[in-house]
Length: 171
Image (cartoon, rainbow, N blue to C red):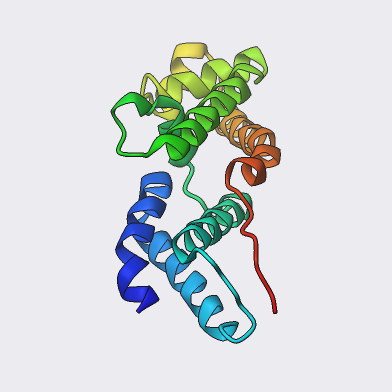
């Protein structure tokens, strides 16, 4: 009954954040499997809130694990949250995540940031960036690796506070 009632909303919520169908299905399935395995000791007053918080926690772990596709951070930084389908709390969380990502990009070293922006905003290939800047393709690749690593590292401390850890009620 829980699954039938909440699966679609949880999937939409996860997809709104991750934009990865398979990852969202896996996360939702993991949450429901965990709930099923712990059903005897789990006492939840508001299952919808609990399940949404559990999905947020799983999403945070997924992002932190590095399994997330590279484009997530760039897409999140560009997203127009004023036209989103998110509710009030989700809107605020997503807007804050957007600001954190923008700040992480701003904090990159100047050349690294320039290369990152040429790749993500100007949609130039590594070869085109190398030609435009007069550097090797390998240097562009290295700088992109550094940029993505630093962005993830800067965002990681904020994920748990933004994507709330669920509260579990035991007997």
